[in-house]
Length: 458
Ligand code: GDP
Image (tube, rainbow, N blue to C red; front, side):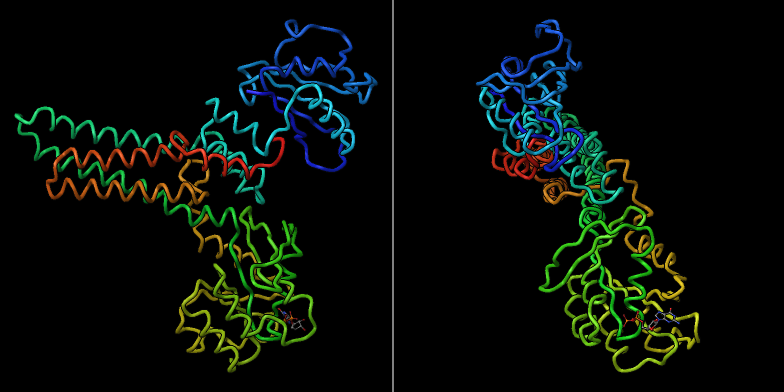
């Protein structure tokens, strides 16, 4: 494979920049543009060492930058090929210039994700690990980073392998029946097979289900705060945002004119929808009132509805209760520092059976209760991110679903006494689907698509 090169550090000015090369001829190319201080031959240089020197212009031989170069010798490198990393000064122009020399000296510009793709194609990591790397780089919260890191360490691969072994065991048992029909083992092995298949189904189901949490970990709990004017929405927003929970990012929302803000709630991302609508306008009608709430609540995972507890419920409050009645929602009764009107006792409040939390947005009382409730509602307390039982990727979810279906088919086959080899076909199908998760038989298109999402130089 040709030798590839790319700038691996992010664009912009920084202390250092790293230009990376990988491929058989990596060191030959490097030699043409790098003058080492202590001129050692490549045979003498050990892997995992760094050399000090200068990058020179390929044509004029003029010194360009003072650098340190790390050497990685095959197969002990990120890609398993010969690799080097040129640590230059971290300016865009100088990094670009060094990259140019690598290309002039014989390297080809790497595509996004090509280093990691090589690590995958050369068998050092599987597809879930590669996907873990991209997720780790893009993680917006500590919990997401943790889940991605575990995936990159192979936790999901292990889980998938465990389920594959379970299926192989069932197949082996079934094949005994085919091979030795003269022994009347069919009855026994049928019930055993069903029991084993049920266990497999249960494992697959758990994994599939974990995607609900995994997706949220990746994309945030889409949350909308609603309430009529003066209920205390912007005060609540301030109470949430003013704490040291950093705003992770601000993006245009999917609905026109909305702004989404990602905050990290004990490491779990909360995507607040249309906070701008609450904060930036003095026009009361513009604030997230009933009409807009109706629209936004349809795209939300969670509605936080806020009521002024010093007042009685009015028409508008009732409309809000109506909006949230079939949704995942929390009711906040605000301004408990003032007068307590005990809105929680109102029949309409009780009827919809939502969690009610009393708060004072002004004094930031009750906000912690709100956080804890959210964590509880989305089962974050139960999920163990470490054990590989959490999937965050839709591709994995789809394949697990397919495998589940195939396993179900196998079970039905056993139940109705279908020919054993038909049952085996369904089980083989499930095995293949699980193999695709780790990339054993993934098509080129899928592989290209996955790696195209990587950044340059990774
Ligand atoms: P919004 O229209 O829903 O965004 O409501 P604001 O957050 O602007 O609050 C409306 C009014 O209620 C303001 O005068 C706030 O100071 C007041 N307010 C908000 N939260 C509280 C609270 O917890 N206690 C008290 N006493 N007043 C509050």
